[in-house]
Amino acid sequence: MEVVEVFRSWQGEGPHAGEEAVFLRLARCNLRCVWCDTKYSWLGGVSMGIDAVFRRLIEVGGDEIKHLVITGGEPLLWWRELRQLLIIVKGRGWFVEVETNGTLRPGELLDYVDEFNVSSKLSNSGILLRHRVNESALRDFVSSGKAVFKFVVDKPEDVNEVLWFIERFRMPRDRIYLMSQCITREECIAKDEEITKPMAMKLGVNFTPRLHILMGFR
Image 1 (cartoon, rainbow, N blue to C red):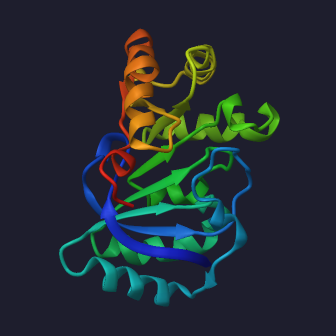
Image 2: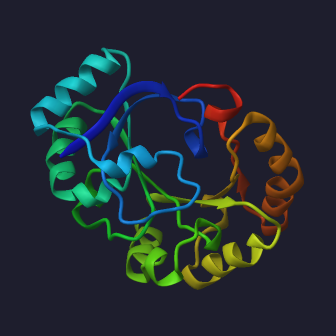
């Protein structure tokens, strides 16, 4: 698999926000969102074998961290390699999160992942609907009971698109998180208060801050 970086930090979004974890960022993505903050991952990474990746996770996490967040890019492009890695990781008792754009079916990874953070893209991503929505994949994630769904919102009108996802795929509202499209701390605070929190209340879903931006960590 192609690895962009391995680092230790705190989860910045979703139900595990604030929890310390080891992050494994994999290369390549099948989408090109206009606001992506990790475009460098599109260009590729260092080719590493499964054992080498696992050793690196141990080096970075030490003995105390047993929480792995796999991100990208789009990690499910590497599902075959991930399956082999996660057999080892789960054998050591780690909790595993995988962040995905929800366009690829999870398949066998359902047996090894504790939680999928599915970030389906809205039109504010600049991606055509037919490229950013895979109905079979989303239904797999919903039926698995292992997924939470995160939506990046930018303007009040985005509420209609989020509602479309909720109703079409019967997404449980208690497993949905809205977060602001923002780059700076000031922008995040403003959008959280003016757009994202009111929208979450209107829809009866969760709000998540972007702690890594608000607090200045990776």
